Image (tube, rainbow, N blue to C red; front, side, top):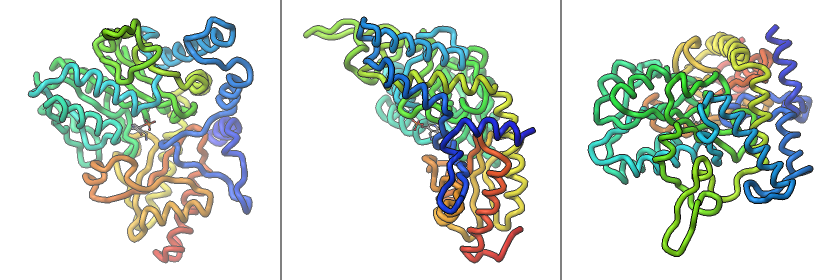
Length: 415
Ligand code: PMP
């Protein structure tokens, strides 16, 4: 069943169905960095340029009007995906990084003062770490770190100790891009709100793997990127509750985001235009809709079930490899990411040797230096799974690891 599902899904991704030199198949295990695109997304984006491209929210002529309609349809698709109450709570940005910077700067600089506290943890991606450090420095607010449990989950007892009436905001990942940890967002939101603080969710990794309900989970701000959700690069989303976005300042100033400009000063447009200065990534934002529809057509529950069964199989096979050390929570308590080291093998050498077998994984600190410091290693190798991965991909990963271990003379063979 899992084989049939994967074959059907995989056939929609042309990049995965090519053959590398010497007949080597593509084993793409780096979707946590960026996911591949189905044919529907590729076609939809190309169609913008072929049939009706124009700048957005400017022209009354037919092409401009169609672009505006398509952008609003994409915005409505994001609203549906997140279960946001209002369409204007969805702003298009360049990606997660920009969305986080908008809130850290635009909300943080306006509302934080010395004595206020922001709650962070060492598992966060640099994109959800450095902007808060910067705003703390600028405003005199303090950063408090909530501990991780030894297996890399948010220590909820420690969170209770860290939260106080001084806490203004808790920022947390929906899913760690290294450990696969999926913090209990609704519970963390409840705890934050109980002390009068807000919650920001970095959903860059979680959006492709689980359904999100910003109203049900009481999420105040959320960010994600199109490119990890099988959509185009260059476009992302900032979600914020309407009353919060209204008291968040823009980060970028220029065309389209204004209401009125005069020599004396300027005032800002309403939501979401206030956060959409300049020319949008037009075709990319429009093609976010077929990406969302792709995910919806399969169903996030089915995607998750498929990925979790691959993850369990990968863990089982990888744990048989001598010298293997996998980081993070138990396989049943995390998303489909496996970060590991193999004793005696440098992560970069390993990644390079895997590439010889057409197995694409990432190595390094994955933009999480504080996490790697906490783990006590300077780098890891990461294999991450998406809806189009198959049992054969896992088998090829294991074979490639075996090949690498032989090349590195770690042992003759593990299998
Ligand atoms: N947060 C997390 C958890 C991520 O994995 C990433 C991407 N690696 C980002 C933020 C940043 O996303 P982007 O580069 O698309 O802005």
